[in-house]
Image (cartoon, rainbow, N blue to C red):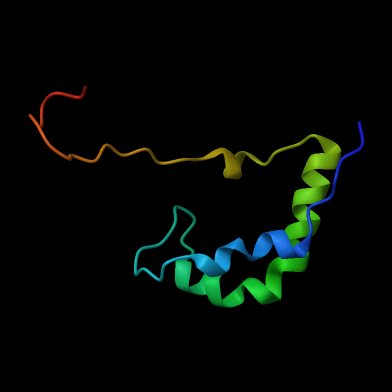
Length: 79
C-alpha cells in the first residue's frame, strides 16, 4: 500500500484556531500555535510523514482530556 504524504498545506488547519488564554496539556497556548504555524509547517509535515512511514505514533499525541459538560436536566444523571 502506497502512503500519500502529508503536505504543508494540510497543516495550516491550525490557523483557524480560536485565540484563548488557556493552554494545552503541554503548555502551548493556541495563540502561540496559531501565529507560529507558518514557521513550523515544514517540520510538522516531516514528523507526520515519518510517523506514518515507520508506523510509530508518539505517546504524547495519544493524550486526550475528556470532560462532561452540563447542558440540561439533573446534574447528577449522566445519561
